[in-house]
Image (tube, rainbow, N blue to C red; front, side, top):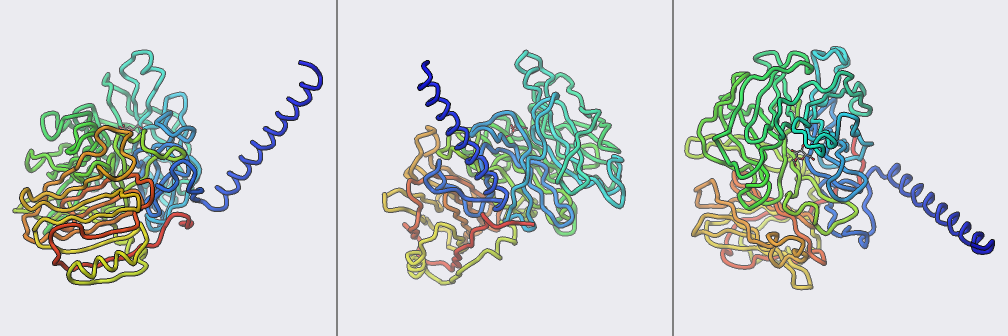
Length: 520
Ligand code: FRU
C-alpha cells in the first residue's frame, strides 16, 4: 500500500470508529434516559412491537424467570441473549414495575459464568433469613436457577444441568452468586432444570418443583442451600408429547377449601402443536403431589403462551406471566432487532365446572387503568360502527353472545386479516391467522387453531385483547384461553363482526400504551 492509500484508509478507520462510538453513545444515552424506548418503525419489524406487552429493547428473550413481588416492586427476569436475535448463551434480563404493565428496563441481573449459562428459575423473598444471606430486618431476594454447562454438553456429558443460587440485598439491583454453587448436583439426567421454589408454611421449609425430563421432582430445604429429594410425579400422567419444563406449584382456594395447582410446561406436544402449558389440580402434603384425576388440561390452548409461571410473595393473589411465543417458530418470527414478548399478567383462580376445580386465567385487574375510551352496546350493528371509528390496534372487547356460530375479523388495507370466533357444533373457539400477513416463516403458523370450551353454558362470555401483533382470548371467565401472535405487513386497523350471531351485549375500550413509560 502506498502512503496516500494508507492515509485514506486511516481516515476511513477513524471515521468508522467515530461513527461507532457515537452510535454506541447515542444508544446508551437513549437507553439511560428512556428506560424503555420504541425504535423507528422501519427498523427490523418495529411495527410489530407491542404497545402493552413487555419486550426486550433488543436481542432475544424466552421464558419469564424469577417473578417476585418485593417491597411494592414486581420483578420480571427473563431468559435473554443480549447479543443476538436467536437463542444463545442465556442471561437473566431484568425489568421492574409497580403494576406489571409499565415496565422499566434494568441492567442484566445474572451473566453466564464458569458453571454455565443461566437457565430458567425462580426468586423468593427470604423473610426468615433461612439462607443467612440477609437479615430479618433486611431479607435477601434469592434467585434459584439452572446452570447449563454448554461445554460439558458439547463434550457429550449428560450431567451438565445443575441448580445454583444468587442473592440480592438491594431489591434486585445487584446480585451475588453463592460461592458454593451448585447447590443441587445432577444425578445423571440430561434434562434437569427450571427450579420453582416457594415457602411451604405448614412445614416451615422451602419446596422446589424441578422439571426432570418426563416428570416433576419435588425437593425441600431449610436454607435454600441444602436440598433433599421428596418425591416424583407424572411419568405416566398428563401430556407427554415432549420434554417437561418450567413447573410451578402453588395453592389456590375454592369454596373455602385449599387445593394445589401444579403447572407443567411441555415442548413439543401442545394441543395446537409445539410448546404449551398443562396443569393438574390436586393435593400436596409438603412431600408428594397427588392429582384429583389424570385428565390433561391446558392453561391456554392457543399456540403462544409458553414457560409461564407465577409470582412469588403476592399474598392471596396468584399472578402469572408466560412467554408469548412457541419454540416451533419463536426464532424465525419477522422481528430481528428484538424477539418475543411476554403475555399480559394474568390472575389465576379456581372455578368449579361439573364439581371439578379448574384453573381460570383473566387479565390482571391492573389493566383497567389503561382504558382510554369505552363504549357499551347491545347488538353488533352499533358495535361495527364503534370499530370503524376507531383506528387503533390496541383495544379490549368484552361481550356475551348466545352459543351460535360467530366470527370477528381485524384487517388492513392490504386485505390481510385475522379471524377468531366460535363454532357451536363442536363447542370450540378458534383463531385463524392463515391470511394474517407474514406467515411463511413456518409451515404450521397459518393453521387454524382450536380450543374446546370447558364451560357448557349456553352463553359465551369473551374478553379479547389485541395489541398490534397479538390477540388474547379469555372465554367463560378465563376457563378457556387462547393466545396467538401474528405479523401483518400493515397494522390491522379495521375490526368487524364478520359472520353469524348479531345479538349480544358488549363493551369496547381503546387502551393506553404502557411501553415507553417508566415504572417504579
Ligand atoms: C423453556 C426452556 C427451559 C430452559 C430455558 C433455556 O423454554 O427450554 O427449560 O431453562 O428454556 O433458555
